[in-house]
Length: 421
Ligand code: PMP
Image (cartoon, rainbow, N blue to C red; front, side, top):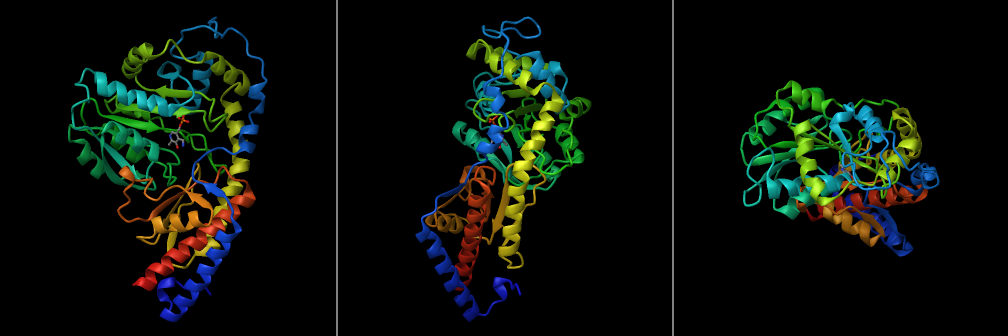
C-alpha cells in the first residue's frame, strides 16, 4: 500500500531513507550520464526532415525574387502564407526571418531600449518592468535580466494568470511588457483561454506596453486534439488595441532546431517599426532556406502531417514520464506534476524546500536536470519547489532510467527533510 511519507512513523521513515540512500548510491556508482535539461528535438525527430538536406531548391521564388541575392526583408510569401494559415494570421501581418525567434525577441527589446516603441521614450534609462508568469521560460527571463528589465512574477494557472492581478500591474506605466506562451507553456503546459486573452488585449496599459506572445508550441499537440491557435491579433484589434501584441513563432521544433525559420506576426504599425530597425541590422533573411522549407513542407497540411509524426515519437516519452512518476511518487504526498496536452515539458513540483536538493542528488547520480529555480525570474523560486523535465531528447531507455533516478531523488530529498523536522 502507498502511504504518504508524512504519515510514516519515525522508524519507518528512517528505514525508507536508508533504502533510498543505498538506491541512490548504487545509481551513482553505475556512472550513468543522462540528460533531461533542455527541450531539444531528438535525432529521430530531426531525421523526419532529412529530405530538407537534399531537396532541390530553385533559384527564384514565386514572386520572381532571386533567393540567392540580398533583400526581401519581409521574407518569402510562400512560407509566410503557410505559417500565416497555421497561426490564423493574414499573410500581410506576418514576416519570416532567420532561424531563431528568440533572436527576434532580443532585437525587439534592443530596439525598444535604443529607439522606443510607437514614438515613446526609449526604455534605456527608465525603470522598465515586465510581467512574468511563473513558472516560465528561462530564456525569456534571461533577456530581461540581461537588459536590466525588472520582472514581476504572477502565478500561471492552467488557463493563464489571474487577469485582475495582471490588469492591476499593467496600469503602472513603467510596466512595458508581459511574457505569454499561450499554448502548452514552457514549462507547465498551460493553455490560455479566450476569456483570459480577451482581458489581456483589452486592459488599459502604457502605449508601448506589448504582450510578447511567444507561440513556440502552437502546433505541438501531444494528443489528437489539434486546437487552433487563438486569433490574438484579431482580438486585440477588436478591443481597440491593434498594436498590443508581438506574436512570435518558429519552425525550430518542426524541422531543424538549428536551421529553421522564425516569424513575427503583428499589426502593420508594429511590423513597420520592427522592419525599419531590422533593415539597418541586415540586408535580408536567408531566403534560400525559406524556399527550401516552402518546397519541402508544401502547405499548412504538410506541416500538420509532419507534426503528427513528431507526436508519434514524443507522446510515448511523455507517457513514460507519467507512468513512472505515478508509480513511484503517486500517493506519497511529496510531489505533483503536470499532464501536458502539448509542448515539450513536464513541470514537477516537489516538497517545498527540496527542489535544489533533488537536482543536486540527481547530478551525483549522473542525471542532469534543468537547475532548480530556472523557471523563475533571477532563478529565485521562493518555495524551492519547481523542476522542469524535458523528455524529448533522450532515447526511451535513457529517459526511463533518468525518471526512475529522479523519482528516487525526490523521495530521498523529501525523507531527508522530514527526518530533519
Ligand atoms: N520560445 C519558447 C517558449 C521556447 O521554449 C523556445 C525553445 N526552447 C524558444 C522560444 C526558442 O525558439 P527559437 O528556436 O525560435 O529561437
